[in-house]
Length: 111
Image (tube, rainbow, N blue to C red; front, side):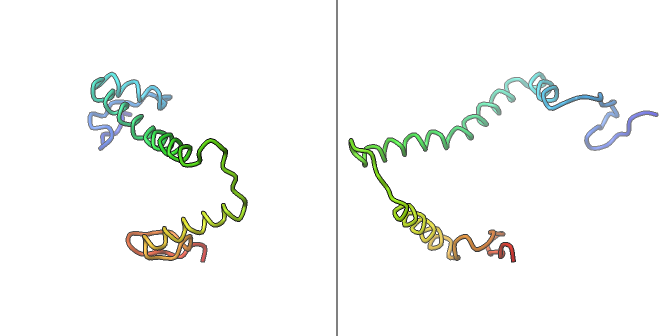
């Protein structure tokens, strides 16, 4: 019986059993190496961007704290959390942590 033709197999080429993700990635890299390299570089840059932002923010907060380490109590951390959630609520126009955003409306979570 010959392999069926379809959107994923227009020529009816038999699929080799055991083709894993690494083998498929290697085949894609060999098909268009330049495009694959650009795609990988952009993927790495996209996922590394939060790390760079975090390092910059660390330097900013270290400069604000001065030479002594910051000591924040539990009450201080809770106040920061409440402030952040209030800012998020003011930004979105909806209550914080009350549901999941779906399009432009809020869908109640767990209810």
